[in-house]
Amino acid sequence: MLIQSVIAAAREVFSPALRSILWKSLALTAALLALVWLGLTRLFDYFLTNHPLSTDYPILDGFAFFLAGFGLFVALIYLLPAVTAIVAGYFLDDVADVVERKDYPADPPGEALPFGQAVFYGLRFAALSLLVNLAALLLFFIPGINIGVFFVANAYLLGREYFELAAGRFWTQEAVTQLRMEHRGTVFAAGAVLAGLVLVPVLNLVTPIFGAAMMVHLHKRLVARRLADGRAGGPVRLEVGRRSS
Image (cartoon, rainbow, N blue to C red; front, top):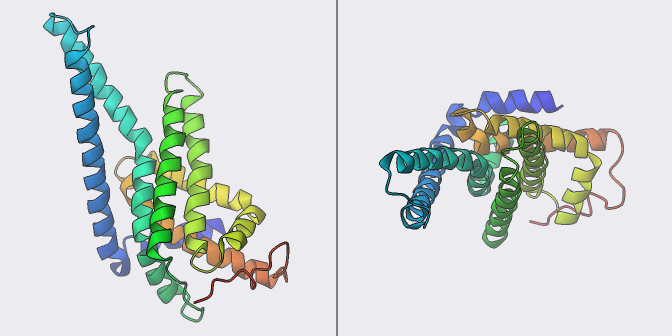
């Protein structure tokens, strides 16, 4: 199920139907990363120039600037999930509309989240990702733990948030939470795919579009299997939890 969703998303992310959304996503991601980089460089430059430990020895100062540049690069890697979270929240409904119309034409279309709720979800997603990755960044210099913490934390966070964004087009928050908890292992595995993609240079820029498409497919497959197994009921009936148009 997850493998089919990954393959379907990989096939569609560069397709003509999603190409215009992909280019917009890349442009927004690049712009946000540039703003983050500019802000961090200005902050580090101010700190290194005005810090009392600043020396009169050009070699030492140059070495300090080199270390600061490396630190900025590492910080940018850890901040990338938060940036992609903002982009994902902005473009998910556009991606979902295309995927649902193309691959699930017989199903009722999802309902785009209200603008205020979509903004809230996007900002919440980005804030949580920022906090998690800043915490992971503190463990950067502990070998064997740093990458593991980064990967596991982002696998959980990306899986949960992308899934809730996709499923939230059809169900109330209560029903979405129930569905996610019932399939927590699959959702975490999907998040692990996204966390792995974030670690791949260049390809990580397509994470928002790929993640949105993959979760749309995964949500559709999970609901279809749930209904096929006769599990429409439960603590919260999905039919009762359906969002009203």
